[in-house]
Every structure is written in C-alpha cells, then in structure tokens.
Image (cartoon, rainbow, N blue to C red; front, side, top):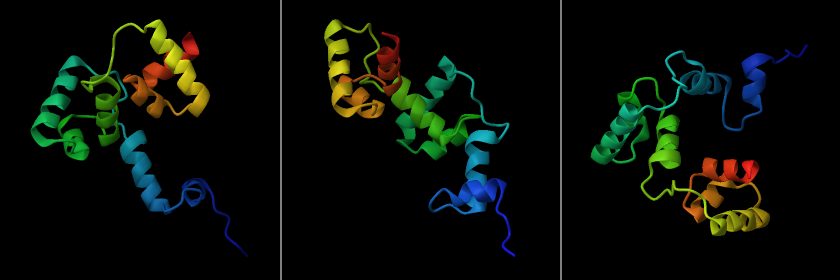
Length: 132
C-alpha cells in the first residue's frame, strides 16, 4: 500500500531540487519564524544596511545577521527597490509613463526588467502601471 504524501512533503515534492527538510528550513528562516520582521524599514535600519554594504560589499547573508529580524532576501530587496543610488524617485514624467506603457506592451509584466530600463524600482513601475 502506497503511503499518502501530505503537508510539507507534498509541497516540497512540487519544488524541484528541494526535499522536505530543505523546504521547511527555507520557509521557516525566510517567512515563518517569529524573528523575521515584516514591518516597514526605518531610516536607522536603512542606514545600517548601507553602512554594512559599504564596508563589506553585497554579502547579504552577513548583512542580514547584523540587522535584527531581517533576512538576506529582505536586505537585497530593500537595497534594490528603495536605496540603490541609481533609482529615480521623483515624479513620473509623461515621457516615462509612455515608455512604461511601451515596454510593458513588448515584454509584459517583467517588472524587474521594466524597472531597469526606466531606472526605477520594479515595484514603482508596477504600481504606476496599475494605478494610472
């Protein structure tokens, strides 16, 4: 009689290259642990992130261990979506909006790529597209 696979095992079996334990550990460390903070970043935490990045380079796991409650993924995302020095944060121009629509019509919802072409965060581009 075959054993029915349920819960984490069933979910892990759907993710190539992950066994049950690896998937559970990843989910716990990055999503479910009560130590993981999902609150907005503060200016102090942004400053810490930039300081560690300046001193150690993009060693996101190391940086995350220095900033309580943040994961390596969260640190990378905060930097690339909010703190990267090349990101435009000013008001959208009509030319940028036109380019957003043009690029979206060509490549679809590949927001990271769209953001790269417009020098804006992928989230800013997605929000602008759906809210305009």
